[in-house]
Amino acid sequence: MDEALFRERLAIDSMRQGKGEVSEDALAPAINTDLGTFRCHRGRLEKLLQEGQDIRWEHTVQNVTSSSQGIIVQLKDEKALDADILIGTDGVHSQIRKSLAPEIELKVLPFVVFNGKRQLAKVEFQEKFESKLGARTIVHERHGDIVLEISINEYTPQHVDVSYTYSRPARDNDPLHRPDRAIPGATDIPEEFYSELEDLKDLQEPFKTVFEATKVRKDRVLHWLMRSTLGGPAEVDHLAQQGVLLVGDAVHAMPILGGEGANNAMKDGVDLARHIVENGTKSLQNFADARYNSWKSGVEESEKRLAEMHSQGKASL
Image (cartoon, rainbow, N blue to C red):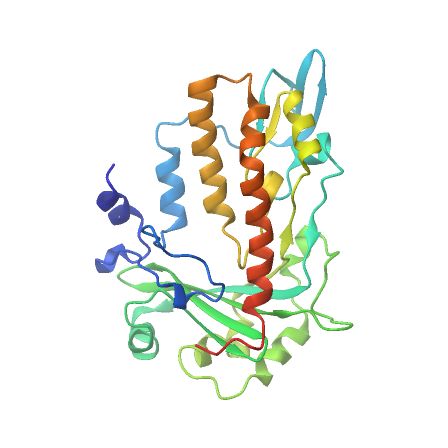
């Protein structure tokens, strides 16, 4: 598939003959947008990647053990699986990592982030949003150290799906910073969040409509924790010696804001496939060694971008 067809199938605004183009100044974190960067529709990308693959759903990894006899993957309510090689692509909450390398811990960064989703009727979008956005599919503005961001997720003939993010650094004794909350607690939204939205003054469209507290209350809103992690070289090597390789967010997770976790996870997959074709599966340690510096710099840079995007020295765009 050539790049033109790839964009045509996946670009977030392809229904409007757009190409998903995004400029660096449209992004709150300063991510490099060279080399053909574009915004794609996540659902359509996932379907494309699944084409022709034998993917088996509805299986949950409960525990993993490793010994000189091999690797045993225990699935919930199912028989265990035996393996010689195990590639862990199970994300930031990786059960494989928890089982075999519990010393690699997640770090929660000191930022408050809430993300919401809303479906807008096409008429409302045209009246309040279209002239402000132009050809852009993502916009942001700053109020002190608070960053407001709006993204278009999909255009259809009847409606437009948008997501929005409210983020800021954590304060002292901050009721909105809950680094120890349980995963299901992401949907528990404190009243203080809506109070902070009400305190935002002089918002212009489309921010005025999107961040109106009464409307946000009706949306699907999640409390996002800005997590990162990075396994140390010794830990990564030890796993590779056992035939286990963690990739993507399972071993080098980046915060959702400021990070490029999905892009880097896909690059891990492509590079690993190429490595296996050329070298087989007996040299996973060499692959991990070759990629490690890139993983380390990616995590460090993403944490730095997250801090910089909330610096009050930044101008409002």
